Image 1 (cartoon, rainbow, N blue to C red):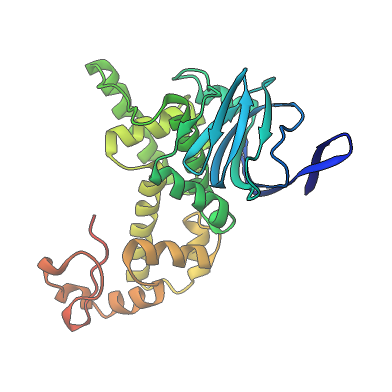
Image 2: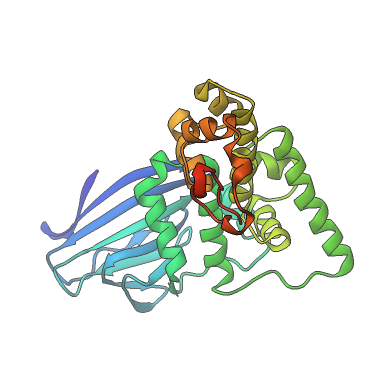
Length: 306
């Protein structure tokens, strides 16, 4: 979609917005502006919560009576009713990823932290990589992983960089452990459960679940879920499972290709190779000191060990 922002009939900024991913309570959009004049745009009033990551180019943003320079290490929130104006000092324009949040999701994400601020924040490199993943790969990715990536990006932007849960009291730690163990138990029985479903079953917000699970286990819910599903897949392959389509469906993967990509990423080889090696029982010839990924001497396979 292309729109033109101008004053007195003069074209200044051509803007395109393309939805690249949409989930429960959010939409991820690739937004690009092509500027020809440095003048301020007419005021725009935000209709909801939007987290904007600048990926390339630069511009000036005027909001809440303050002017801020935004470049490729900047991120900021648009908040409902907030007014902003944009100006491009050069002719390059900019490319941004905008995460639009539904009212319910924005509310639960703010439950455990301050209200989102329109002040810009610096984007650490791991967040920049996550934003690129969402923008370029979300349509082919695991939707559970996409949802958790969105939630972690937004909650980090709300609470600020480097913030982690405070060391819990004994009673809180017990509750956290119960929540983490409850998540594991649900996933062991229903690997296809979504992040929001996991949260609803345990009467917590997706943000709280993701944060506490990471604090207790050192890994994300989506990473743990993938490890769990890959281990089940290895067991099924070792037992001689022939239908990769059926295996993908049983374990909650989108399709055969999604199953193959995940197993290759986690275990270092595609399912057909693993099935052949496991069926031949060559895995028993692997030397323990060679664990860490790849095929062991003599053809034995050792998957990623982490």
